[in-house]
Length: 104
DNA sequence: AATATGACAGAGT
DNA sequence: GACTCTGCCATAT
Image (cartoon, rainbow, N blue to C red):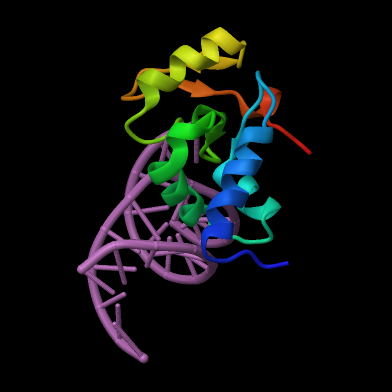
């Protein structure tokens, strides 16, 4: 059942809101749950309407946090118990998807 | 209708 | 594991 128009935005926000605390899902996973493969489209929705959902629970397939939001996201991961591993780069850490990837 | 943009993914190197 | 290149999808112009 293809989503379209505003429905797409609502669907993305609904899925993100369903991700339980302490777990995360990749952009690709969210898109897949919508029956779409537009990982980038999901990112667009987050950039525009992410303020109303736990956006930090949506991460990249490589375990990296959303571009430009690594610092803010790290606080939530620590507070919710999401396993992260410190690294020496711009983000400063990496999310351990192997342990906290959400699977509906 | 066509082109450009972006909080991306996967395959190849 | 990291990097680069190409493909995808939804919006804005």
